[in-house]
Every structure is written in structure tokens, then in C-alpha cells.
Length: 436
Ligand code: S3P
Image 1 (tube, rainbow, N blue to C red):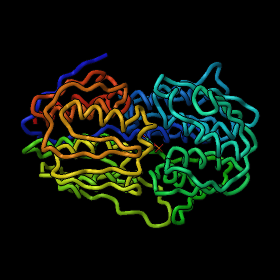
Image 2 (tube, rainbow, N blue to C red; image 1 turned 90 degrees about the vertical axis):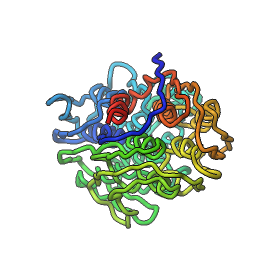
Image 3 (spheres, rainbow, N blue to C red; image 1 turned 135 degrees about the horizontal axis):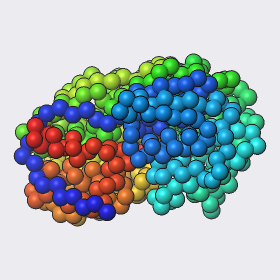
Image 4 (tube, protein in one colour; image 1 turned 60 degrees about the vertical axis):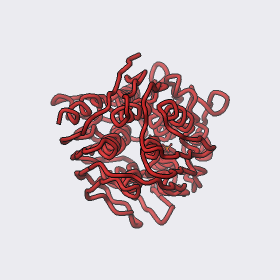
């Protein structure tokens, strides 16, 4: 385990390019493996989670090569219905997105059985949410205690369904849409609130008929996928740590380049702006009906500013889901109360992020209360500092680091290596802004 002390920073200056988008990299690898022709992916994320995905698709028969110092990943897929059966279980590591998307493809491999397993954190994350729609489509899913990994997917000739998502989850939506490609007609998913739409966009780029009508997303079955070359934008969820640092550390001025600005991922940016933080850039507008086959990319300017508390309601949660820990941190520095509601999903992430964030920030001098579906933060104008444990959760490790930069006495993060799951160059990027 790595322990790192993050001392208070005077001001952060300079320019930083966030690492490639984790969600889009997972999808590029999986759709690349499903495609009939080789797919070239530029700026693939080389981090623990997305390396698990490359290894998983290799195990299923895809040929993956990495060239040009890592910048170019080429995936020669098996085609839609020809995934091979590996010798042993597919190891998804810590990657919930891999664990929930891949079964959508595997469900369409008639008569073939695939077992998925992962680390100790993955083994407490539910898969019943994907098992239910896949069973309705005709696949067989055998899970531990009927809801947890390790679990086995046995593929079948799939029926198309219309599925009402019980929770707004892009992972579950994506799983059903991928299975829908191999079903016997058009498959519809109804979302309670719009979640990230990278799968829809990438499928549209691959020539699939994808429609959005309000909260309804429909895909039509296809014989094969043919994807053009892909370029992965910078990850707005990783950029969010730099945004929080720039807003919290007095006198800071940061430029963030090449970040994804997809509306379904920039809920945090809108919350920060509402709290009074300075985040300027061309963010995508809320989408109309219809699906575009591209991902917007832009630059952002971030500066320190005084914050006031805010209320985040359920419909704002999906586009900010992974950044809500940072909203809690900003709330500690804001004037008044910051409340997040309708975010019960946080309890099912890499750690129980309601418990770990509230306990972690309280140990640093914050004044937070956990609720069943969120938290209440009473702003105290700052944080004293202390020690926080990552619980193996990458976002908690990086939250502790940013808290340290903005604190009075610094923060020691135990388990800092967890950041490698999504942001292996995190410490270097922060270092460059401190010295900037
Ligand atoms: C993701 C969707 C979200 C998010 C996760 C990545 C994705 O999960 O929290 O980090 O890539 O689809 P849910 O869809 O389960 O909310």
C-alpha cells in the first residue's frame, strides 16, 4: 500500500491534459472486439480498468496490438456472434463497467458459457441489474447468491425487449443495447433520467440505427458492426479533480485541454458554476432527440472563486454521478449547506461512496451527515487536514489528495495506488500545476 502526504498548495498554475476517457475506452475495446473489421483507437486509456478490458477481449479471441508508444491500439475483433470461450474465468479486475457491459455481448453467443470474476471490491457489486433484462431476452445468468460475481452468462438466440430501467444506469442501458444488436428485432431501453450516452454515440458511428425519443433509446439488430477509427477524448471525470483543485486553492488559474464536454458527463461542471466556481469553456448543450455519432472535445479555464452551498436533486445525479464526492468536498469549503439527494447508487460504487466520503471528510475536519441516498454538508469555510484511507477506491484516493492541497495542514492518503485504476499520471499532473 502506498501512503502519500499532500501538503497545502499556495496556488496552482498551468495547463493539464486529462487522461483518456475510461468509459469511452471500455466501449471502444468491447465494440472493437465485436466488430467485423479492425478498429484503430487513438488515445486509448492505459490504466488498470481499461487494461482489464483489453485482456478480456483478448481472452474472447480479439487480437489487440498497441503501437506508437501506446497512442494507437488496434483491435481485430471476432465479429458479433463469434466470441471464443476462454479457458478460465474472465478477470474484470476492479472494472464495474466491463463487468456490466460485456455480458450484453456474451448473451448473444448461442449455447456458449462465460464466467466473469474480479477483485474483492467487484465481488460486492451487484450484477442482478443486468441479469434481469438479459434473462428476459433469453440468456441464462447464474450469479453468486443470485446477484453477485463470480457469475456465468450462457448465450442464446435473443428476443428483443422494451426494458424500463429501475435505476438510471448507463452500464445497464449499454448492456441491454449491446444484446439488442443480436436480438430478433428492435430493442428499447427507457431511462428514468438521462445517463451517459457514449454507447449510443459509438453505435451510431458504427452504422447501427439508434433512436432517442425522450427517455426511450432504441437500437435495431444488425448482422455486423463496422466502426471507423476512434479518438478517445480526455476524461471529464478525471478533469473534475483538476477543476476542484483550481476552484479550491486560492489564487489558482488552470487550463484543461482536450477534455470531453459531452452534456451527459458535465453535470459536475454545471454544479460548480452554480456554486460560484469559475469554469469557462464550450460545454455541449443538453441533447435534443436523436443520436450523433461523435463526442465533443474542448478546453476549459478554471479559477479560484468563493463558493456557496447548493442542492443537487435526483435528475442531476446521473451526469455527475462519479463527481459527487467532489461536490461534498466543495461543500466543505462553501458558505451554507450543500445537499445531494437521490444518489443511492453511490452506495454501490467501487466503495460505498456515501459512507467513505462522509467518514473520510469528517476525519479531515468536515461537518457532513450521510443520508440513505446522499449527504448533507455544512460548509465550514475549509478543512483542517489529517489522514484518509482510499478503501481501494480510485476516486476516494484522488479526493483525499485534492482535499490536502486545499487544507490547512495537509492530508495523508493511505492507499494512493488506487488512482492507477483511472488516472495513473495523477500525481505528475498535480506536481506540474504546483510548480506551474
Ligand atoms: C459508467 C456508468 C456509471 C459510472 C461508472 C461508469 C459507464 O455507472 O458510475 O463509473 O461507463 O457506463 P452506472 O451506469 O452504474 O451508474
